[in-house]
Length: 88
Image (cartoon, rainbow, N blue to C red; front, side, top):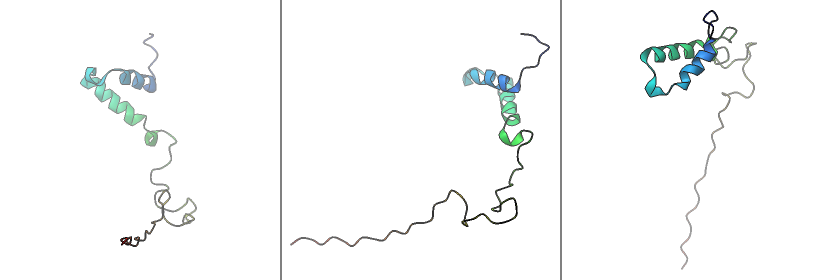
């Protein structure tokens, strides 16, 4: 391999992930952790600001339609059944 070209962080991450856990050195573990942090979605350039939509309002400052947080189902009420009659 040509030493003048640096290895892509994604390629290096794949190389480190190919090594079985028990065979990785401490330095390889440290490098792996650092690459995972650098390549995480929230740390990429151009990534949206964290918490932008977590405050419950749309970007225009208006509340989301439908009230409550997305992904939660409304609470369902269940009624208790009458006990069965004993047959004589």
